[in-house]
Length: 431
Image 1 (cartoon, rainbow, N blue to C red):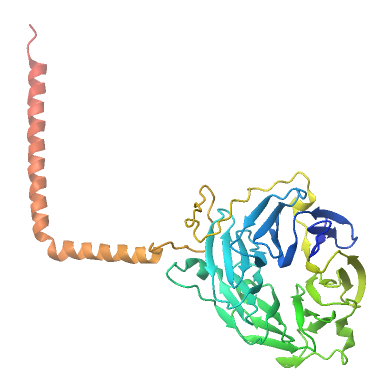
Image 2 (cartoon, rainbow, N blue to C red):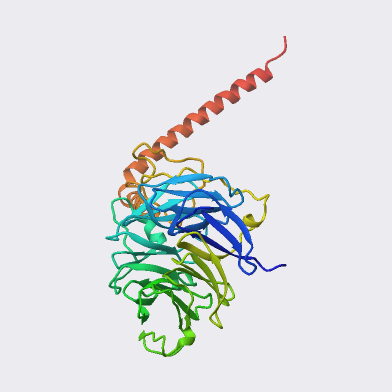
């Protein structure tokens, strides 16, 4: 079996020829282009390997394309306001968008808006799910990074405000990027900020594992799959490599002049996005200098430069889904209409029916009791009935026994009368 093909998916803010381009990572050959709008920073996502979603720059809608029907814009997902960042869950069940200081969570199968999270105080700048879709992490211009348990978010009723699992507030300037490693609830999360630091957190405990101070603001951050290296894109166009397995203090400073072998140089403007190939040998970077570059991680040399028509807003290395390479592939289900209002029943929106609802937990609506409370109520009712029968139900029991005895006597009399009548008919002499 051939190895999966790795492709680069890129967008720029100009979108003169196309909205998004897909090219083969090693040969540089263009595979697909998508037309229809300008994708904003942190606003590009693949949905379930079947659709490409792009949050439009400064617009209040998300564009959606089928991966193979690239020239036809399939749907516009209307939103309450301009989308500042966008992501999808790896299991394909949810779409997550940052709109101003709020986070909107939609269910893909029905299009229902499940919850709105309002714990940031300024615009949300970046969002990402963990690899198992169990948690989501958000960063904002309010210098806060919030880690949320998806199951807890879905189980909170409308009368309560969902609370994040962790609030990381050690950054002193707006958050520019974040990256979730592997491990699901045990993952490590890297966060970058304009305060010239990159911090590494442990999702399970919420502890700070590492803080690295640089000489410039950090605009992008990522890790390789083995989580051996941390790559940080600076506002001056440099890319810094931090070795996570090297011994050192929890708080350290990165000195480029003391370790020049850990710096990628070539971009002439700030680095906006970073991504690493599956084997960890190739680094992809996008910049405001209107280029996307491929780097050999070991030698720090640029192996390919791809010019675009405007500042790069998104650039990522992904394994090409089957639907991207097969012209005959069609999505298993069409995208539903996405509701703009919570629970889909307000302001004229109708709740969408007919879809398969898949959730990690019970999403309560109104005062609907949980299964645990129902179990407790049933147990209390059974206990009360048992006590009533044993202690206080003797009189009712005697009355009921008497009624049943009378009914049995009546049935016996009817049976005896029927027997006598049948016997007379049978034994009657023939005329």
